Length: 635
Image (cartoon, rainbow, N blue to C red; front, side, top):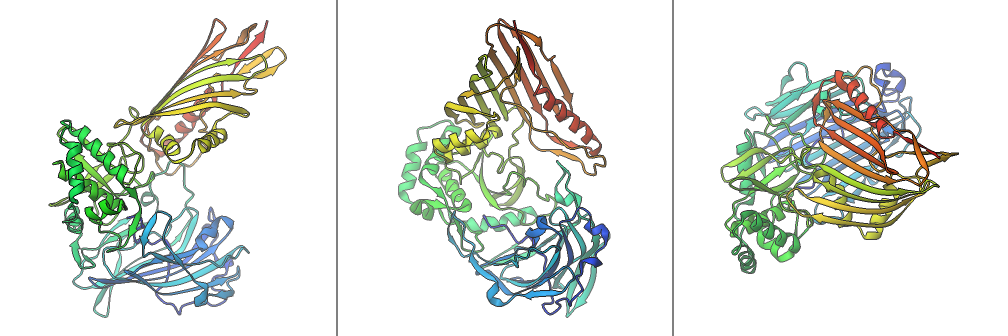
């Protein structure tokens, strides 16, 4: 389910003939309050969603946006996808200058019709209609009107007038038109009052609207968008997709629909059954059995997006995957489910919203909020999670792509919300030991042995599994925090456990590491773990502080000094304790060697807005301490 679902990102109109006359969108008419912190202004947004039947909806959209500067150009790009289940009926666009005078109107041939198939897609009926006026005389205004016919009722729009930061809103509205006997479900965030209701040709109309919303200047570590701006999400009660029908008034009911889509698709071919038993039958430990079968699946399949069928929602059956050796997240997860079933191990097809910054779903509003599928394997004393689209990850580990968030577990009784594992400070760790020698000219030769575990090894795992050794060296040459250096050797070794770790060994020569001034050497003993967190002060912090990742870093450093130097200045120990985490560092000089120790531990959690100043101070203290210098004087 790679395709993002029908969440309204562009804001569009129900009246294609209502194009503005000259001057209506003159920038001079804008309130100064809407210009503050804004890169663009949504002058007008009207969205109309009609539920004509259980198998058909029409989305009619019209939007007008004034682009104030180069940073706002992204708002001027129009794109809308379509496939055999989603038809674009019409698209029109107009460009205006700063005075609101019409410059250009789109013609049919101006709207590009492009394939929506990505490099990872083998089969995909997704296409995109796209257009941009590519106008660069600021400010300017664009207007688009689009009408889209959907041949299913699973996907309902969202209404988010301020769908991006630095966007102010002059007027925005959404109307939902439904038969009298159809329940449109919705949940409002930061919306005062209730929708306005009316009747239209024996249909009920519910309308939400808002005016004059100043631009949001996003604060660092602020909460999700639904907490900081107006938003309404919608969901069907009864719905249909293709020949399948379902209801979404509860997670259990939605899960029943998903279960129906995959039912009967777990039959393996005879040769795969035999392989499964040859692998699993002699193993008594359930975890080892799961791991070995998972490795078999990984070695014999690859991820390819297959966005056909009923909106890309129904998995291809296990025989198809076995024969072809590929599949998307649905097909590969169903294949692994089938393999485990043949081995007598129950598991559960599980929907999840994937992405490092996509942990939130509205748990009290059952609706389609997912874009990925993983497998849950419950054991007597533990649960094993399997990411079936990754051919290199180890069994039981999810990484930041799907960890620490709600997911919808599917079985024959329906759906149930569960939580995927959270990786905390005990799992996300970096331990590093550096042994180095400094010469009289300030050059440093060092051997750094580091172990990264949990989320801290994710990026390295992706690099060493996805790039050649030469490419990895190029990245190391770009990313290490030294001015001039040479990587003499490097090596990586992976530990494939449920909480994976990677051992890294670096042999590096750093020119001019220490500053030499007359008789003095200036050395920063923290060689490789200097914090770059240095936050700006926010005198009027509005939103809570939300830290999402926990980790621990420990460094021990031993530096052999050139002969004939004595210490002039040695920094004192530093201890910083805070609700955000703890930090300590210390330096000592013994027998012509510098010994440095550093420990940094960050907590996750949500903290009051008033505590932001303390967070700034916490990171500032660490930033300074990490750059403390030893001053040595030549005898």
